[in-house]
Length: 194
Image (cartoon, rainbow, N blue to C red; front, side):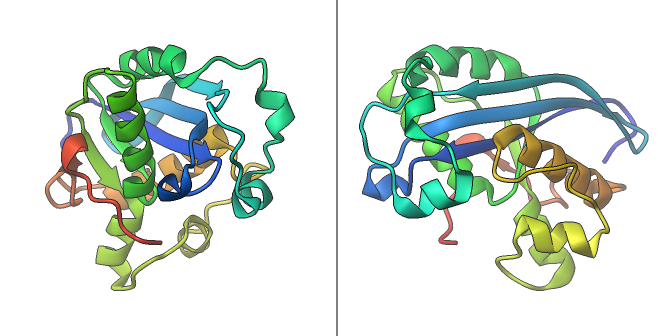
């Protein structure tokens, strides 16, 4: 990436299941970095748990993210969280692992809440890994092992996954332009099957 400072915002969601089965966002996280000359500095963190509109929780999602539905009852609804999130990511380049999944959920929620669609560039670390390793569907854990990145602790919590994805992105991004990294505008991201 270019020598001048870039603002990078790594995003991640946790959900109640697949969107086509009625899944909703129940956790939204982002970590914002200043990135210059190959060095990243954390500027801020965004982390919100969200009360879903329905009682639908897929057994698979519960097993993965271990977010107890009972703990979400006093959390704000998505329509209160999304404006804060949009403000947090404003003007940044977004990064996500398997970005299509997260962006698909966020776009659907923005439409349901009649909120504006951001036009940020989005880099997908899974896509970057596919280009680099000539393999598809590389999970975050496999790519972290490949780059010898240690997970600080826990998994499938949005802010922890943001930190891990950020470390991975900064290792892979050195010296490349957004186009070379396969960046796509937020509205144009295609959801890929995992």
